[in-house]
Length: 415
Image 1: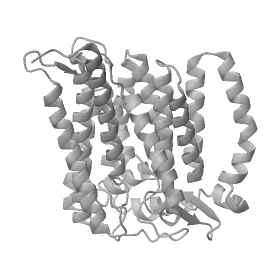
Image 2: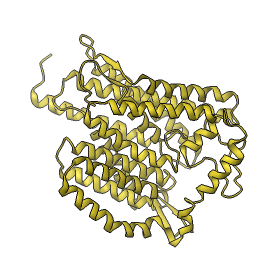
Image 3: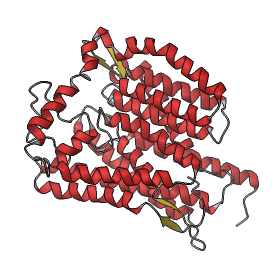
Image 4: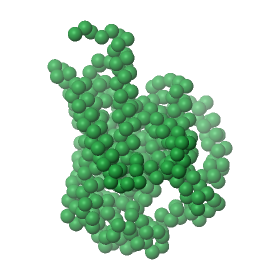
């Protein structure tokens, strides 16, 4: 078989990177509602996620050279092992869950997500280690491109079918991008992760027209979600990378622009319809959390109500606030569904992952970890988050865990 020319090698490498972007784009789509029918949506999500997990498993085998296979080493073992322990706790909680079928389904989806990320990250490492293609592949670039495509998808959808892509709140006065397809706050979090990945990519690559356009589209989608938490995390992520650049000519203008636009954003996005009380109560979350701790947690403080269950019934009957099916805080969710056992396990897991971040030698991967973490952490304070019902925030957290867990033996981490 004739050897490929240099141009063919470059074209093949670019094609494979595009393929990775498509797969991550599809994976994100697998968390969307495609139909108002729960059964149709569940089949779509299960089928697409399983297919993509299988694809990355096969790619690991395809990329690896059997004559000179890539050797891996595993660091930060406890960061990964404690996450597996968290899943074992979830599996065990099925025995005392207030809805065994729901808990079993959620555990199964989290296990599948762990397997997906394991083989996806492994594929990145094998691709770069084998060195068959002149263009290296970086997770930050792949995720940024995939998220920018998602932004285009929702912006076009909002034009073509606004009833599906916009969600009316505050008596129909506020329209939020996301519609019934995805929670607007979750879409906003995704935009922040995409922006963080772009900033990381720009630390080792030049800004081009298409990258700049992708960032503008992501920002536009973020603003249209009207998500307060996502906007806060966007500013936090942006300021982090601006400070990390160490360039005064970039730091000063960014802070000046931030100060100038803050009043406008505050009165258009943060204080919706002039309702300051809504902001102060975090849209009713504070009294809801108070009731959860007072009347829910105290019933089963050690083991909780079962994986992703917060009470005996499907909705917790809050006295001071609304009846809710989830806590709108991933750490509160963890405390209610797995009790103190889960809280200690996952708290330790996050600490060991942070230790892995501290020990990472590749500065780009350290910045990537922060760029992805800020968005999902802020989202975790108000939504599903990294220890909540199945969502792509869990996937991004698992990528962070694997970045500091798995690397190619004997060489710098190139992911």
